[in-house]
Image (cartoon, rainbow, N blue to C red; front, side):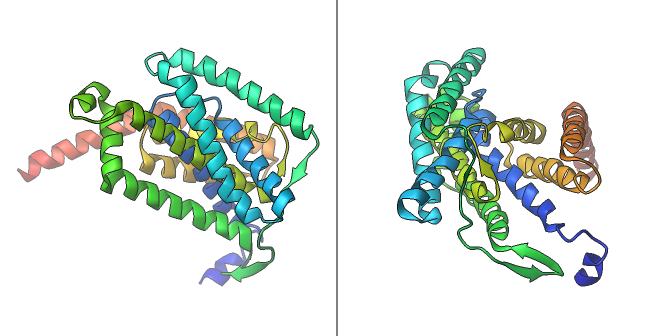
Length: 299
């Protein structure tokens, strides 16, 4: 059945799945820093940038891209910890100030990267190379790894937030920090841990997608808007909503690129996101009403 369907689809249709995975990967870190903590984190693109350049630099030194990906998560996590402890921990009750602080920090990081590496494009090697045939499609191995990585990370985050003590404390901190403190939860530690985790995941995403892109100092800006759209459309703090939004926006962009230019496709996706943000509260209220009516009927 799948080979028959594949005969009617473009040969690079698997790229739609890859794009969905990329949208999910670049948004997972923002799910913590913005979706849970409420920090308007305009440094998110620079965490992606630092992750990509870390993978490049480690590749240059050791020849290993895989090692670079691991180091990228550590370096960006450390950068996130320094940013949170140095600046953001004083601004959690002032969202506008977090926007200004992260905007300034993002410019500084981008300029430092450009100063060190210049504006010349850099490439991160494909760690695996080659491809295989899946359901009639020619699938590059590294793109397949990106899809699998996105699935694994989403599953691990869902399990960690719902089934561990850390996740319980994190959810309590996000929902009511004052009450969490009275229960003995170290709110400052939890906030620092969540922001560090978000930054590390973002850097990991940047390193994972670097081999399928050209890396420049503006690399992170390419993904910043899409990451915010995914988190906002999916609902603040909702991991399930993030996955759905990544599928809608990434899938739409991937499919539209077969019929029109990337620029026009991106504009259409932005319109879809705006419409989605507008109707999501209405849809949520309708679903809630249906559930209430169903509950009353069963009783």
